[in-house]
Length: 408
Image 1 (cartoon, helix red, strand yellow):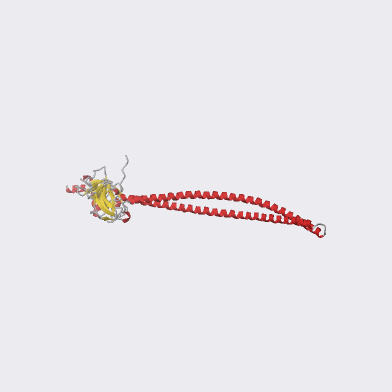
Image 2 (cartoon, helix red, strand yellow):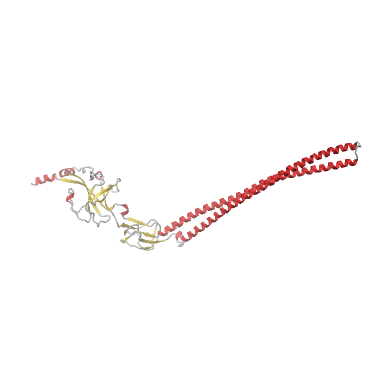
């Protein structure tokens, strides 16, 4: 009978499995224990919480005070705002100066145009006068030539005794008068021509003078534009500083990033100095989707896949386990493989993350982060004799791919 019972047992079904040890963790990174660091350096003035306290998101944990000399002024924000207002006034002044300079440039261009028009009119009048003087000079020259011929004939006739000396003197007087008129007309003509040259020189001088004035005004305008650009840059820099100072004032209060429990306070006293980025306390979130991280050896890794069922024994929760007959076990919990890491861990094994299987028995509410867990990954069903033979020969469990459940 015993032999018959033993033979029957050898042909009973046995569920192959892989055992691994791990611990309880959180399924999401933001639900795990995290550090609360200070962004700025400072001195601890007040603790609003103690280790073990439960806090809400936004609650003040620690109050700091300033230690850097650049930020000790209590009126720092007010003075920075005053500097911004002063810079804005300076920029407005330069902008008004630019507008005035532009008006000045337009006025200079208008004056130049009026002056040039005046010189053009004067030049035109001088040209007409030069033409008139030229005609007068030609007429006087003709009169002089006629008077000269008459005088020469009169002199010849006087030498011949045909006319009297009185008549010769009268002709000489006419000749001298024509010569004087000729010289006067020539002088007047050359004076008018010289006046035309002076007008042309004055024309160039006026253009040069107003060009220099406009260039100087343009230079002042560009200088004002440069000052405006520099002032606007200074305003942006001061506004940036003001925003940084305002944000820094809010960093003197260390607040809770989420609901949770305060643990592991690294600083304990009032007046202690903390550095930038230094860790102050840890916080464990109140709402946690628990998961189990197990470490499996590389030889067993191909037998693990996402969606695979895993049974657990949590430390502190009694259970009766029959590894080959999971249905006969009592006190175990079930999970589903959520992720399998592709890189080996420091301990030489691969980490797998298992989440709760809500279709089976719910995990205990008393679970805490770091609770030990023994996992049993369920594999293929084989006869007992095959499992004995496999273990005697140190063969690994059979490789198989889990069939996906058919959709109804």
